[in-house]
Length: 304
Image 1 (cartoon, rainbow, N blue to C red):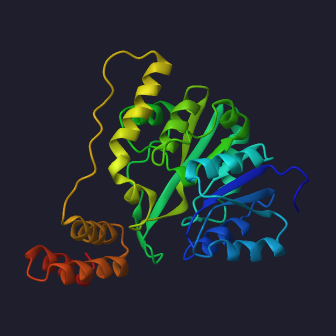
Image 2: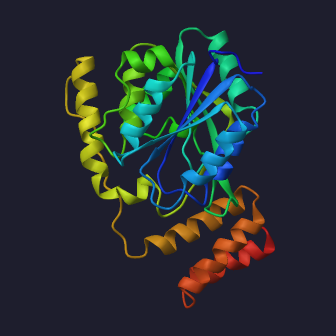
Image 3: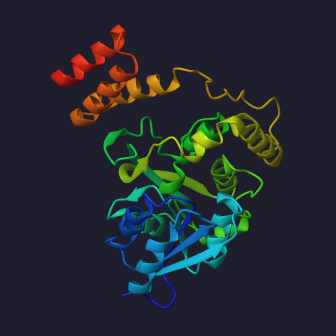
């Protein structure tokens, strides 16, 4: 049953994710914790992404589809957060998958830790077909570790895994709408300044990797955006000295080949043999005369 004012508001910005959005929405509607509303903000999709959501909303009163002109993910997320009625605000992306107990465990954590304004989780990286790759490495759990990592340009909180206190998000002003990338880093730094943040040390999300993700599409804006976020954080916190150097995304013509090899090795190390063989074979097709391609395939076929 859903209370008149739900405990959790889940916000999913949607833009041209027709291939993935059905799985994302179902993963929320089938949560073990049922007292939520799901707000999907269609940010001017042109591929029919909203059709499944519209059909699902007709059969589940917890789901609400809101359409707007294309304004970008930050504006779409802010629109959804402004509509949220829940005490807690969970974020998801339209191409990711929440595990069934995600909301239940995060609500319990925030109830037990009133000083926390945000809790994320570990994630399993998956490819665009849903095949498991490897778990998110090096997750930090404590507030001090997470906050220090964010200031040092580390990826310490995964946006689609987070649940936040709605009041805290509104208090810091939500996302900066002039950012198309790293808007999450900016928000999380601001939240860490008014309360404590944390991560649950277990996988509660499948995080999809594919060439049209925001990180890939806006890679050329990476340095400028993150430098702006860090400068603002330095100013708010009264920190002295220069901000850390932001390394650029590598502009490597062999980037796709390296990605296939990396995923093959990491999947193999994580025990996902079928996925390792998939990307080892792809690497061999991309570079059939390269000894490294054959070595990866040999190891993947043997399973170690």
